[in-house]
Amino acid sequence: MSYAIIRNANYKKDNLAGLYKHNERKNTNYSNKDINKNNFIKNYSIKKCNTTYTNAIKILQKKNNLRGRIIKTTNIACEFIITSDKDFFEKIGEEETRRYFETAYKFVANYKNLGEKYILSAKVHMDESVPHMHLTFVPVVHTKDKNGNEINKIACSEYWKGKDSYKRLQDNFYAYITKAGFDLERGNTKENTHIPIETLKKVTNYENIKYEIENNEKTDSLDISKNELETQNLSLVVAQNRQLVEYNKKLKTNLAKAYAAIQKVATLQIENTSLKQENIKLKQENNKLKEYIQHTFEVIKTLFDFPVDRLKRLVDNLIKKYEK
Image (cartoon, rainbow, N blue to C red; front, side, top):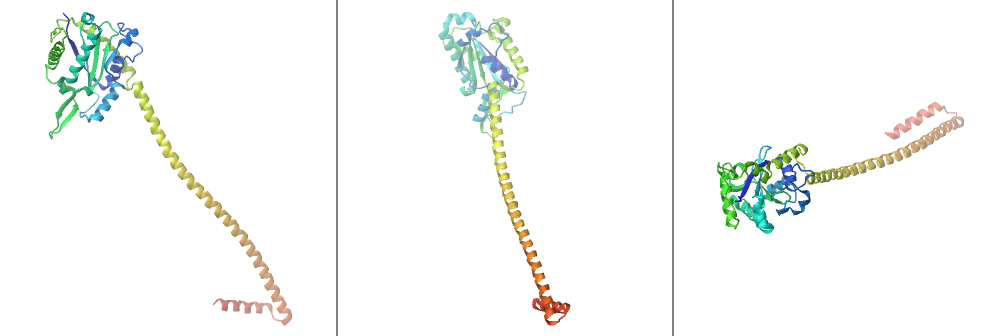
């Protein structure tokens, strides 16, 4: 008898880059030799994520005003691995296999009133020995704040509140999937004694996913995927361009001021040169006038036998009297 299998794993922000790369087949090499790259084309999405999980969560937070304190140790995403065994899928065929995963997707969207929009990605892998779906979602709970206002917040611990939360998940999933017409058995909730643990790990690809996520954490410690890096680089270029525009404006203003100052200096230099020339001309005229006056005194002295010194005093007194 085949079993309805649904398993959950919680992930922190630092795990999302590795999870995204594994689920969306963004890695170049895979430790799991069971993965056949030639069959990548057979994989399909029940819901496609057009960006990284990290970026998708940021968009959801902003768009839906999601509450919740997010720190490094916060479980910000959950992932269901939904599958059965190889015999079950071979028996029901491709169309029913797809309906199985589509039915499971609808179950998750409605379970605990989650909402389809909080499902980040639902990727079906057909490139391994057993078909399975990686369904990644944000554990959003719909509750009220201290003032009684309805709010939505990211709260993994509240979403999985209660010691029997996983048991209730499997109970509900089994009821939902069998009601949809799939002939499956409910596994033992404690230790899954109906399914050997090694078989379960192989079916769900547990060990390989864990290895790839941990390996990606080492190489992607900044949690930046290629698309995020391109987005950040674009943002940086835009920011730098804005700074250059502002700098250019200031430079133009300063250059205009400097040009005005240069023009003013040039004008003053022209005026100064003109004044110097005028001063020279006045000095020349003054010298000529002095010579003329001196010559006049000499003429008067000769004609009237009048002392020059006395004549100068008379003229000086006359000028002073005139000035008063």
